[in-house]
Length: 247
Ligand SMILES: [Zn+2]
Image (cartoon, rainbow, N blue to C red):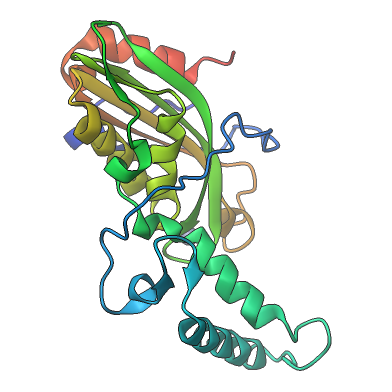
């Protein structure tokens, strides 16, 4: 099985493993939805400015405009937007997209909230198999899989349930897997200033599976290593061994 390359700028690497068997998405160990947020990053145009409050809804006029565009898309692919099964689809798609991209309204700080604690523990902390769903920015199709996150504290730890929330902040945006991996690592660095951070994501991309090359079983593996995870071979090896272990 292909391993994430251990080299590279900020440790960001990507390998695609054509041998990996397709595995069904299991129950999320952390069905976490970040519920805090302050609208940080809101801009005056696009979805962000179009949202109600800080989370997952569009303002009525923005939702209406979005739905009208979906209606037009349905017509352009040769469908009848007025047939019974499709009549309410544009509105559903608008609401669904707002929800699936709600990460734009969140920040690492809003996601962890009060969940950071002083702690002298200085060994590796790892949360494996964090269920992850995102949308590829090239095709607006889902990619999904698991994230494994580890860090070595430097005086602070974060509540373990907060790591899945950090994943949500960046997964619930339009993404490429490489950037998502790096952003999660940088978010852990930002909220904890640890000695080091490692993130591995293994994901399957529907844009590869459903269309084009139709490599249905291929899995893409990316990693991002910061601090001691990048600089110390022993730490890096321990992390990658744990991340790739089949428990
Ligand atoms: Zn894609």
